[in-house]
Image (cartoon, rainbow over all chains, first blue to last red; front, side, top):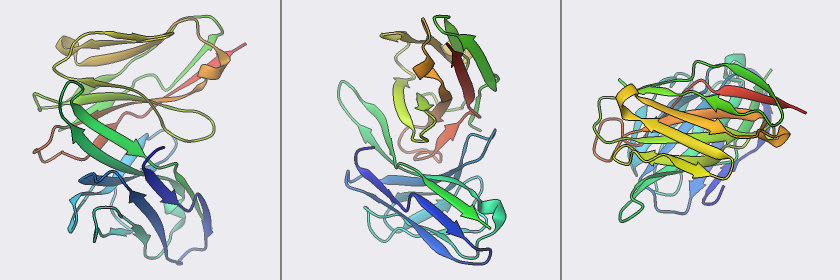
Amino acid sequence: NAGVTQTPKFQVLKTGQSMTLQCAQDMNHEYMSWYRQDPGMGLRLIHYSVGAGITDQGEVPNGYNVSRSTTEDFPLRLLSAAPSQTSVYFCASSGFTTGVYSGNTIYFGEGSWLTVV
Amino acid sequence: AQKVTQAQTEISVVEKEDVTLDCVYETRDTTYYLFWYKQPPSGELVFLIRRNSFDEQNEISGRYSWNFQKSTSSFNFTITASQVVDSAVYFCALSAPRGTSNTGKLIFGQGTTLQVKP
């Protein structure tokens, strides 16, 4: 997925450990967001940001922290991992275009598979 | 509130059959954007289409077609002459325009798993 770099792709954590999922975009998009994907539940919004220095909670924010110190980066932190956080995580970057093909353009990272044991 | 419903959890068809994936959405915004994504077994999200709410033309791309009906708040996806490579999870999603409290959020349906058998 062009423009959004998400790392790591795979990670195994022990309960109680902390880690950070990294997300970076090079499209100068205002909006960035994190989603988790669980079987049968689609993708659910964890946290999102409407610009540098501005973040807000999504549908399932508990156990996660975010910050947005620059336009490019939007890391997701798990402070004390729990088995319930075993999931696939996607970062997204979003912008708005004008002109003939105006609208909301959204790019996703390749996903991070996280297992908490 | 925004919501996307994909009532079909799983669909199984035999190759060359036509199949339609349903998507119903709810939103109070007068302008909005609808998306379809494909998630193959490899796990990445593949963008298929974006539809602006003010453009009600249906669209065809090869074997894929989309039927957008504002009157019934539906954005259905049809695959004609399905192939084994179409086997994947398909997501419908909704986003808001700039300047609203929902801007920057993408609301997903639960996804429909399509299995195409040879």
